[in-house]
Length: 135
Image (cartoon, rainbow, N blue to C red; front, side):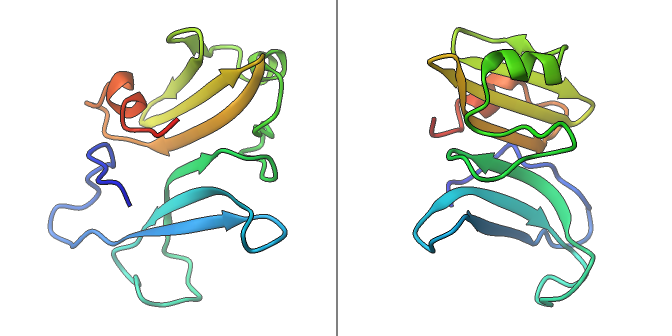
């Protein structure tokens, strides 16, 4: 996993246990994205409810994110309707921010081709995250 300086520092006195999950739809070789979680209580236990969401990256269709049903392949018009306060950083990258939650959308040929949503340190600016993504 690429070293990521943008992940939030969650607890001062506990070790940080981040887990990387590959998101697969259908066949095992159809990886559509990744998800990072954090757990400082039960990091080595399989069935638990102590995981905390950190980040999701999607680069192929197959998974919807949030109650807004955001997905790779949706049109930029659909995205704008679902997130009216979205801002364009440049021609291809659109962003949305609410507190420590930041969402990034790459637009190619008028469609969303990559989604990155996560909880980031509030001091991190958009460009730091954008430059850390392999678009």
